[in-house]
Length: 363
Image (cartoon, rainbow, N blue to C red; front, side):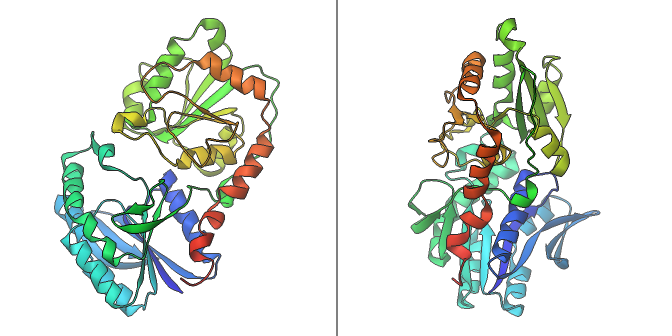
């Protein structure tokens, strides 16, 4: 099968979403399909829509250019028709419009299978703090997204919804690529527990909640905790200056560098404040990455894919302070084995396993 994996934004090397996309492409290829990745690439003073290494369209690096690449699909349609693409897998990031509906309608006439992955659903409230441009995009999306269903063969979701926009869903879990996990069992005689939080930090990650909880923890408990922060983002910039001097900031890391830090950690901290954007249930990619490194996970949202595991600790989904003493007690009493946690994650939460139902044979 000739397949196109389509995303309508730029890929950044150290970004977790980008790693996920490359891992999905590799997993689909492992089933014997020919797959090309189509994405946006920054090139000097312009943007390009590329397929593999081929540039199929160029846009100005301004608001007009952004509007065009979000809502213009004629060059993409021509590529699909010329290259005789059998299937398109779309990572959907809220760009429903009359032009996108028309694009789907036209490629369905070519007998192209259309698979649509919705990374987060529902998603409207996630953009409460977004720019005016993004809020306008979501407004347009609300008007036209329900028209997409008649042209979609499958909707892939990480939520628990049976139907989205009238289309029967296929529910999978977020996952990792084994090739991106550099797990190595490391033992420490230290009585200090290392907590790590990795993200492109936004309000829903709740980094401020973690910091405030640490600041309000009794000294005798704090002495047994080290907090490590990996990543970047606007929320981190606001908080770093006022953070306790005991907290270690590593900046943005990826690959072996990131792995070397995670191997020295004991607990992974996932999002602690998704409630701020009205999200109380989420199938988190970050949790699966922590588990792949053998790290027990602390989070605040519901995640049905992992909530039954004893090495997952769920705190209240509000802005109350975390009971770090209780988290340490949970960790110490369970005597977790990092290699067992990692093995379980790499057995269940890999893209080869999660995408098998869709791509193990021709759709």
